[in-house]
Length: 187
Image (cartoon, rainbow, N blue to C red; front, top):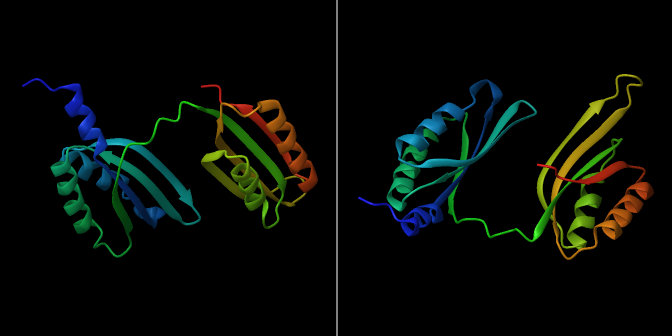
């Protein structure tokens, strides 16, 4: 039987987003990956991170409609484990974002409330999407000061003038006493 590209595309239109939270000592990554494969689905995207004492998994499974239904049933059974918090829902393929230029923004500063809010607010006002965000607090080895560090991957619409955006962003950071850089993603 020949598998047409139209039917291959249709199976990719069927997607299930799975978010799992659990204590880091009981990561369900293997159990979830097995259930995705056993249902006849593909694991198309995944994000795993430790946050505090917990592990957070964000998985995107794709496949035929009936395979996703089988996966949903298997996940419902897995979710009965009281140490696992599981959210799942159907979604579709992401819109083409080829008009967005990927940039990496790194910020380091003395820790204080509101830093992320001000940065995200700036990007939102400029029509820029935050694609990924990783942030953490830490204690500086040399001085013991409480520090904040964040990395944003942003999608800058191609019609935005990059030099002007960078100038405005760095001016904001200077006003907030943040050390920051904004560079194109190079991969």
